[in-house]
Length: 389
Image (cartoon, rainbow, N blue to C red; front, side, top):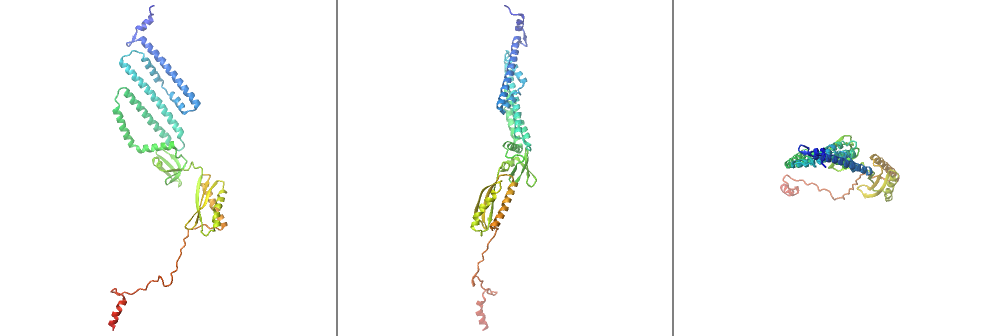
């Protein structure tokens, strides 16, 4: 049975030296490949959405967002490359097709990486941003820009290397240039990374009361390069983020309670019974306040001019004003109790003992006159008597 005229025409017809039947097979393979890629992408996206809905995992949500960023144009290019692989092409075209495969896959990886970086930067801002922390958005933008630049630089170099270009000298030039730029902006980069450390580690936040060296105040703003603190005196103190993190920072926001230690002294003529009763009096005064918790009260030491007592108690409210109110109440209570007990607070005193000198001791000898020549007068008296004689 002879083939039909259409089949004979297809077998005998060529386009650009390629048989028509081979082109039809390549087109069919490209269509099938595109359909398979599209179905596989939808299945993977659906699985990722189901995983995200069940586990509420941020990784699954990010995977869905990344997969949804797949380029349909690159999918079509990959499908055409699959179809082109079915053709009987010269050797140089096969090499070009393999290079196009690499370029298409690299570009798609770059698009996925761009989307992942954008998602990461957005979530970073959402997680760490707060009122007054203006460095979050700026640092996230700079970080995103740097990562995207690094990503496309790697992809660009990989494509050039796949195309047969020698990139060794280019990489060396980029390295030298990067070192020069890093040295030129090292202070700015130091403050930038310090602001990132503050945003991620959160040693303090806007609104916290902190003490840094000699500066004590409320954090007003955390910027990309500096942090602004409103001091107790009212002025605004601007500190470099790098210098700020080099110092010990006392943050009073996490404080739940305030431990107070104070001392006082009574005079040495206090009777021992009253001295022994003083810790109990102090304890009674502290326990009469619901906002306080007594820890201890002891007769601590013999001071230079007083019997010294040390008292420790806990203020359940961390507010400084509450502590001062309670301390004032305790001080006034001690004054009342000691007045009732006839106990005196000690004042800095010094006792001077003057010893009496017995008669005849310690008196200075009478002065003896000296002549011009330096000899005692008594030594000259015999000579003078002889002359008078």
